[in-house]
Image 1 (cartoon, rainbow, N blue to C red):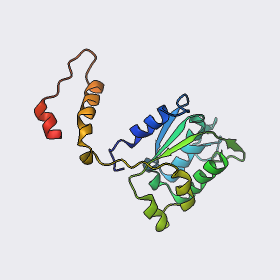
Image 2 (image 1 turned 45 degrees about the horizontal axis):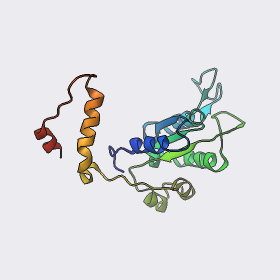
Image 3 (image 1 turned 30 degrees about the vertical axis):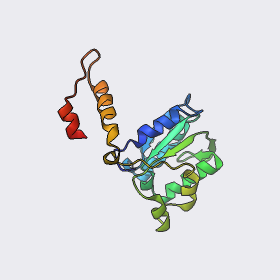
Image 4 (image 1 turned 180 degrees about the vertical axis):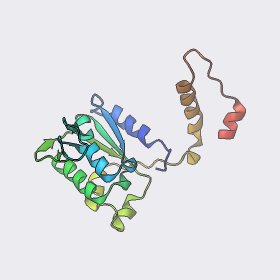
Length: 181
């Protein structure tokens, strides 16, 4: 779905209604991090693995999400070398920390999203075909808000609830709702 369609919200709903709902839900925006930083965030790193690495090392998001779900937002932005490491983690259910020599077992559900056409990216060689088929177990397409205007009042109410202090009236002028619709 396009940016702003609620992909992370849908991913959270999928997680909360799954058998893994007791485990953590961890989200990462793949487009917001460089390849090296994303690799360290996903898989963690050993002490001294690179300049500036902490002396204790760091667990990655795969380890943090163990038993739950890891949401990879904008996976279409992931570099091909990192795609290969992700594929190994999905196929073999193990990963290796940056600078590490031992495999770490992992038990995590991957939920991935993108605003790009991954099938087309596979055809032009910008996304691994084997990773695409490993991830594409269930595909949900989120239409833009312009195609689901009936959601606008629900969103307005949710935002009002979130933004208004408890006990304060949540009023939204009908004219304003008309403009949004």
